[in-house]
Image 1 (cartoon, helix red, strand yellow):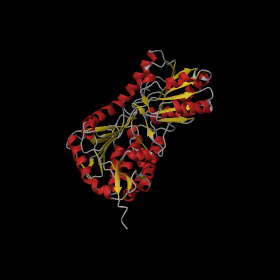
Image 2: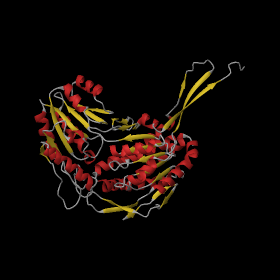
Image 3: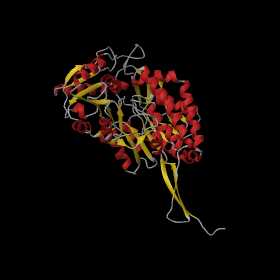
Amino acid sequence: MKRYQLYINGEFTNSNSEETLDVINPATEQPISQIQLGDEKDIERAISAAKASQSDWEAKTSIERADYLYKIADNIEEKKQSFISMLTEENGKTVDASKAEVELTIDYFRYMAGWARRYEGEVLPSDRPNENIMVFKKPIGVVGGIVPWNFPMFIFARKVAPAFVTGCPIIIKPSQYTPNTACELASIIHQARVPKGVFNLVTGKGSDIGNPLASSPDVAMISLTGSHPAGSKVMEAAAKNITKVNLELGGKAPAIVTKHANVDLAVEKITTSRITNNGQACTNAERVYVHEDIAEEFIQKITQSFQDTKVGDSLNEEGCDIGPLVNKEQLESVEEMVNNAIEAGAVVKTGGKRIERDKGFYFEPTVLTDVSQDMEIIQEEIFGPVLPIVTYSDFDKVLEAANDTRYGLSSSIFSDNIHEVMRASNELKYGETYVNRENFEAVQGFHAGMGQSGIGGADGKHGLNEYLKTHVIYMEYDQNIK
């Protein structure tokens, strides 16, 4: 069983703490590695190293920094198959899903490297005849990145790549449930000879090291992808020093299926949107509103689609569409929410319970009907392959119901009626709306939520700008110089 160390100031090092934690394969419930549980002193070491590296790293040209990203991408690609197996083993997602995430990680490093010659400042007209106003874009400084367990490689890249290309050193705290890929990525970064202190990785529990990372006066921005409670704690810690926060939190994505929808297309794409990553993604379709005229057909077909979804251990079984949930706590949470919905009157069309196997945290793909707007299953995020369905008759009211949530990350509409699509595009209060397709963002877009789904965002030029600060120069000159 592999035992991982921390990575601080260009070296693999032991934690100040002697505590360790076994990492569990959710498909087998067997330990697959062991990590050290870092503490506040380890975070202080990492922040100190990052701060010391700032000036030299910032002084490099952006194209020099981008070269490291290309090397990292190439190094990951060389070990692509190893990362696919490792990701499936620690997270439980299928081999196909792991392959897609590893390839997206490689692509993301290369995509962000391409911004080296493209991000820019501005020159503004002045009110004075002998003055130029220049807006410089400079690195924000040391960044703390907290990575979740559901996409441990892609979101690692989403935080590290823009930090590197803009000149920001970074400290990464991976999830204690899925740290293996992050630790191996630290080896990849070390192999690329990234200067000491520019990248640091501290493993451990968020309750132990998240707060000191977010509350440090030497951290310029804390970027977290995670739950709403975790985001609230990070904001509270960051408030002490007025530290910038970049948060992607939960979602409760509605999918509206109108009477003008292609039902087969809606069934296919909503199934994909619900079971992606075993139902454990903030952008997953979390609730469906289907028009009463097509409800019977839609419910019958999506129930069949969920029944045809194969669950299993993708490393050892062929043809799996989804795998186990990430841990026992997540399995119990999903089970409790489904049971609460049933007690409140929901009808199970398929699924509804955990899958009894010798080992593993598996839950049946589940479709629920007879669900009302006030139920917990409609209002609160459920991280599992569970789809509650509500019928509607009035388009005004369905838009109102879709917006009836404290979250505002992703949404979708299925319709061949341009008027419905345009109204939804203008009136849905979400950072993203997908039309006649599955929910998943593009690297060149801007992944950002409204409401309690977060602050700031990621991807594309707008995501890159999260890592930059502005410095305005007012430059007067003498017009009389000959």
